[in-house]
Length: 334
Image (cartoon, rainbow, N blue to C red; front, top):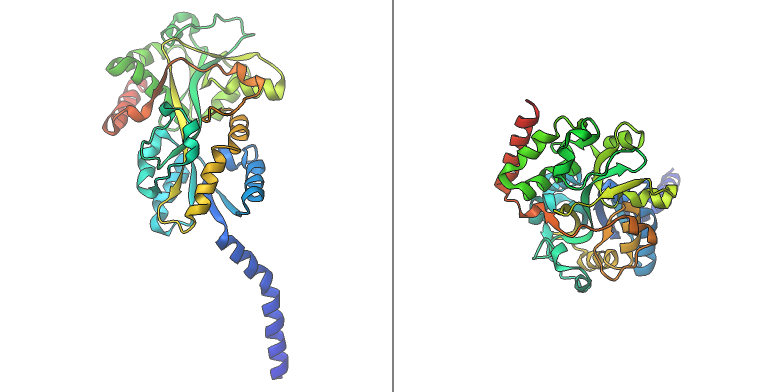
C-alpha cells in the first residue's frame, strides 16, 4: 500500500513538472503592462514581442490593461504589490499620475529623440510614439475644406462635424486642451460657436470615426495620422487630415520602468528595443509618428503631414485641468 501511495505521489509530481516549469518561466519573464492599442489584436505586440524575445533571449509576459487610464488605475491600485516591470502607453496628459511609480532611465537612444518630445526631463516616462489631434474630412463630400480652427465655427458647417466628449475620451480631452492652449481663458467662445456645427458628441474615438466613415458627417475629430490607415489598407486618399496654421495639440505616448523592479536590466533592454527596432512597426500599427529621427517611414505617411506648431497639455497646470473640464461641461449642457 505504501509503495502504491509513493508511486502515485511520484506520478503526480512528474505530472506537475510542466506546470511548475511554466510558472517558473513566467516568474523569470519581464512583465509589461501595455494598453490595448499595443497589446490588442491589431496592435504591434504580435510581431514585436517575439522579435524582442528572439533578439535578447528575454521572455515577456505581456498584460493587456485596457486603455491608458485603466492601466494606470491598475498600477495605482496594486501599488508595491504590482507584478509589472514596465508600463507602456501612458500619454503626457496623465504622466503626473504615473511618476510616483516609475524609475528614471537615461536610454542612450534618447539622443535620436527631439527635445520637444521628451515631456519628462527626469526620463521616468520615455516617449515611443506621438500624434497630433486634427480634424479629418471626407474630400468626396463636396464641402469646402475649413482653413482654420475658427473657420470650423462658420454656419456652413452646421451639423457637419463629429466631436468627442473630453470627460470620457483622451481624444476629446485633446481638443479641449487644444482650444485652451490656443485661446486661453476665452476657449469656451470656440465651443459656443461649435455647438450648432456638431452633429453629435460621442463618448469615444471609435464610435466617432465609425459614424464618419459611414457617411453620417463629413468632418470628424481624429489625428493627422488617421489617413495613413486608409492609404495602406484601403488604397484610398479620400480621407484627409486638415492642418491649421495656428498649430495642433500633440499627444505623446510614453513607457517607463516600474519602481523597485528586480528586472531592471531586462526593462532597460525593452525600452531600448522600443526606441530602435520597435519604432517603425509601432508607428505603422498605431498610425502614429515614431519619436526617433532615425526611422525611415513608408510613403503612406506623406498623407500624415506634421503641423508646424505642436501644443502640449502637460504645460497646463494640474489645478486648471479640472476647472477647464468643469467649465466645458457647464457650457455644453446649457
